[in-house]
Picture 1 (cartoon, helix red, strand yellow):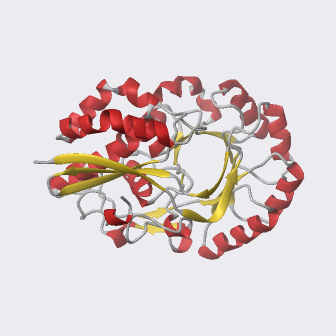
Picture 2 (tube, helix red, strand yellow):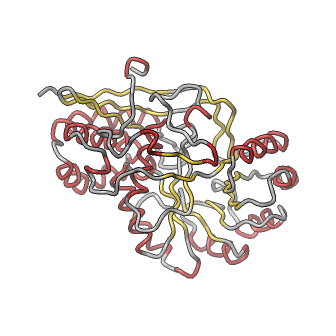
Picture 3 (spheres, helix red, strand yellow):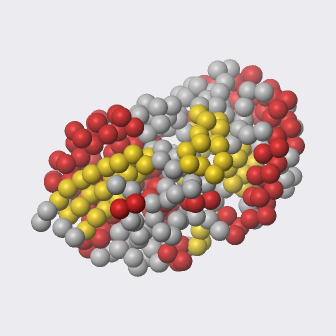
Length: 365
């Protein structure tokens, strides 16, 4: 049986610029991997972000060049994948996004070989649920924030995540345009170095905020705890929680920490499941996050992670598909509909082999 691997940088213009404290994006930026074994082709995706895991597109490609072919030739079963993942943990810790693309492609291919879904391969519940997503608003102008909020409400969203900037007066105008009857959380993308300054900014918005994502420097557990108490709000850990080894920093369950688990950031489906389960076992709730501009591949992979949780996630991000990117890699594009809901039965994911996405490689490679 012939086998092989190839990869490509994938970029598509976004329908609108998306800005936050760490980046300003006008196009998507992913690495797409194809793994072949005989007649079967599996696909995976990485979103390397230097401000998240320290990776770049160049480092991700270097990882795939150095290790991809060996993994493809040696992994013939899901058990073999799990075993090697444990053996190569240190390497994956340094290249989680790059490995994510390789691992998702391998899992997709292995499930196709058995003619079963990815969930069946991983012995998870079948995916046939209606999945609710959050509205996500970037650090855009007050006028653009108002327009986006209006559209989200027309769609039927009630759960909002909004990026904040450094200009309090500008943020006040932005937040005034948000609907009054929404559940609101904010994301600072490690904008502040001081918990008190961050608290003053957030209090100045005069809005009820139930959770704050990455308000100060990543890994500053003491500062994050200080802010949680000052704001009487929960802290969402994203860049501060890349792997389960960082969980001991957040053992104080009285603060009700929340883990934001993103498949690319965490090193693939299996490691994301492991991290999410470990977080829940420690008393944390979980949000399943997403990278701006990711394709349907990562949105689909995150659905699999959700099927592995003992408690449902507090929120889910992603599934924008062609609502945000002008070009996706699957047809149809996996995206939310009315109410911000993905109706997974529409794609027949429970019965389709592998990830169940129709990928057209001639339009990618």
